[in-house]
Image (cartoon, rainbow, N blue to C red):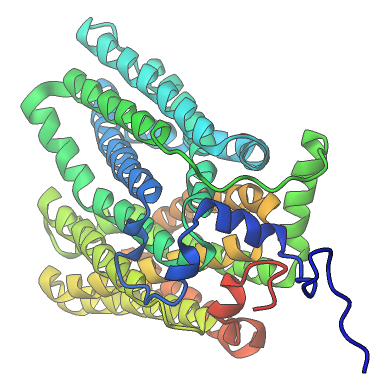
Length: 455
């Protein structure tokens, strides 16, 4: 009988280990012992580097929500114009449109923690300058236009780097849990950020508010620079910047799984988020006959649901059918907002309608984190930043959806427009659920398997 040919040491030759697996074992040397651990709700916090990134997520998200509140107050206080306030908010979309492709490619080619650190230093300096501008009594509205444009530009580079940096800090199998906890940080900031921003204006004034924001950005820079020993990047032949950009967007449009996931990612910004941004103030004033406190309850209901949904998503680590989970979450989100509109129109009772926004907020967390996880895990490692940048383009759809929703509400009323938008979103989600076996059959174990690993 023919014996296996021994290696140089006289022992049977061992199969080669894929580079992706080797890099992961080098970055996480105890992963072999942990690989059979149950991934609980807070599992990703076992990794020191991820804890540092998550802490930064909380600070940067809180600073941005507080900043959004204070900017709105300052613009309206200076001008008394709702249209100028809307124009300042629209300014946030310009860098996303122009810089997202470059930001994604830079994330794939450069050190991600350095991109995050530079973006935070930029936002630190800008907020500090506006604080001194207010303190000196020289603030003009065009200063806030420029500030919003520059801060949004820095954040356009910051977001893809933060989203993809997670892959360098935890093993691939922990990614769904880590992404869910990151969304939990965002939901926490969204729930309390606007209220804190308003309180800080009253307690400290707008100038000191900007100084506090700058301190938050400086803290984020400090935490990200403390991260050490992350997974080494994949070594690939160097392409030109524009060739890399073309490759990233080409993958997003040509890969069937990435393409259908991108379509799903646009449904909420186009049809559901406009309800939050454009219609809830109208519901509060004209349907519930309430004041700013009523609007705070409606927005807070979505934020509270988001916190619950984020914790739930982080706990669903054994759910295999991720495509099905995402679509069901989309249907629940659309259905919850649809019932909210109907109950509001029939009863005019804020407290009867608000619980359905809590349900929609919880489903939004599940839908968003699952969609982000799928797109990031589907993408090749060297194109992950480009995929995160493609996801940013959904922010361009939100202002358009909000503009159409607000304009239509002037003629047909917020409840009717809300019913039309949410019904459209529900039908889109249902159509994909029924017609796309690819999404129905998508499993977590296939997504988290290392490329080149037999399974």
